[in-house]
Image 1 (cartoon, helix red, strand yellow):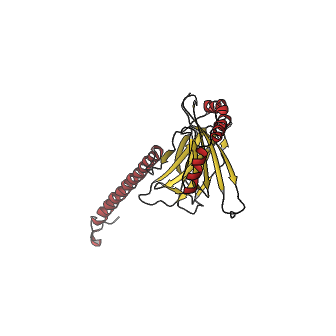
Image 2 (cartoon, one colour; image 1 turned 120 degrees about the vertical axis):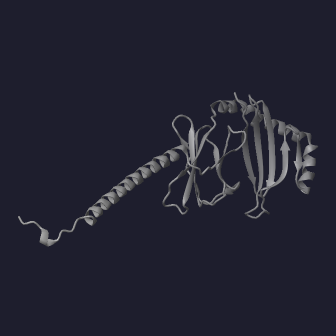
Image 3 (tube, helix red, strand yellow; image 1 turned 180 degrees about the vertical axis):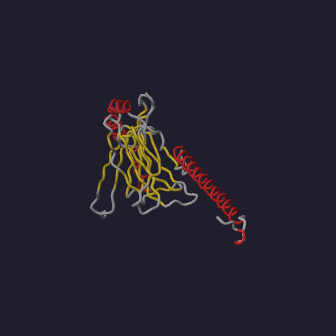
Length: 262
């Protein structure tokens, strides 16, 4: 089996009475599986307040680290507590190690998505151009698709389909982007999936495809043939016109008195 990285994540949201409705404290526990047989297991706990990192535990390091004055003092307390170390070892076993077989099964079924990026016509859109980024034949179902413009996230004019099963265990997913083409812009589609070690970025190339080139060549050929026929017809007309004018202009004038009688 290939080497994969897989995460199991648990979120715990805790609210304190003194916090406002917009404040929240979050603890996120993750299991990371790496290696050909998922034998490298790492257990990570991250605590944050209003999306600001406060503390982190990493089983590879075996300790807590703090990111604020308060959490640095708190992490020192937890690092000196032997019961906390036993508790984290038990959590790693229950959440991570005991699920390795399940993760291996998923890894055997997993398939890397086939990604395509193309332009489509959308006459009713607010923008003159539309791109569609598609992911086909992937498993497991979870996938993330993001549009980038000059390496910056794009959210306006973006729409998504549902993740669609194709009836053969695998899935497909599509996203559309309406945009106004601007010279020098780089439009790209970024895909994240379990089977990818890092996000895959597909850059839109607005040059003509082979099919489009063929259509253009055929169209130009038909246009040239039409011009040749039009030019030939025009030349023929000019020659006939010149011949007629020559006959008329070169006719002899016969005096009336010398017209023979019949």
